[in-house]
Image 1 (tube, helix red, strand yellow):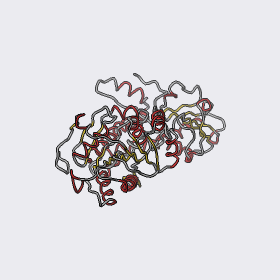
Image 2: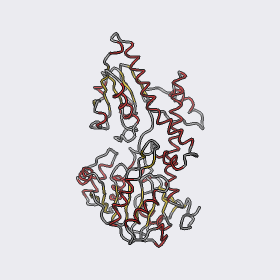
Image 3: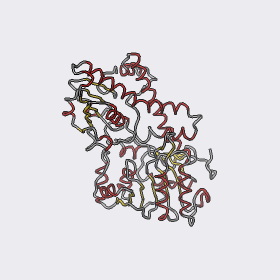
Image 4: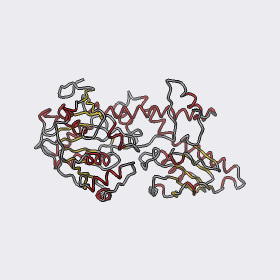
Length: 444
């Protein structure tokens, strides 16, 4: 396959000699969230000046104090050292740099799950005034196919005095590429270094310059795609593949419930087959990637992406199924007590984040389940056991954040997220509903 400029580089990996021809003195990272801040800290740890940009003044102030506003192992140490040594500084307005990395949210909007690129557009237009000839702009945000080209158009609109790859190819003043993050929350600092990077530049020079930048700290391979569109689709494919496999496990759990079969024991037995590896079901799928990215593919090819759409619908429906099972559990508990249907009971929900051992609530099915329970159930005291949060979000104001010891007295315990701290603390009494398989004893 050839790129728009005609070069053929599918699957090519640049040599160290090729990638080390450029020196970067100052890098700007736009968006200091779960990806942007670790990336900024990683470059700063290599003694490169990094200017981090974020629209949130509190985030900027926190980072400039050498602290962090998110939970990620080892990130606090890296940010503190980078700020103390003068290699990392945060601000609310973009400044001049040699390379700009955009790492802002790319959610979807509306009932049709249309991609929302407003944050990317805002970031692109904000850096346009400080762009100079020779600069590199990389879109790191996971994006629908064609987003990098749109970003290039927005930049060109703002800076008609500069040339861009879509019109001037290899001779353009500004280099543009897409390089999506591929890290696991909770292991971001390690995986930023060790994982391969997929890079899709709008020209070969764009790709080579982007690869030389990442080689500053990446020990994995920098694999060049033939176009930014392929790099965009690669990230969407990776997360859609995982979503489809999770959907199989989640659907299997619903089927097993109907048939009276222990799904955890079933998976343990089925996985004894040498070529079978069924994943663990849960209360749904959350996070900003797996719960969002498949819809970008469906939006681009709605008639063709049938399986991907079905998997998304299965996973999106799982929280509602969990809520029904909890309501059934409450009804059963009340039926066993003399006070009956009007009995006031306490329910403790274990875990609110979208995956174990992080503080991230984005698209969390556990959070959605607790929200539903607060609005649907009567005569209920709702407790939330979430060791990774210091306070609850506003939409969970009806619940109370408690410790595991405090939750022990609850009538009904509902496990939603398999945090490691829960593994050895199975409740001693009361009704237990386990939707994460942590308190089960599946066959190994």
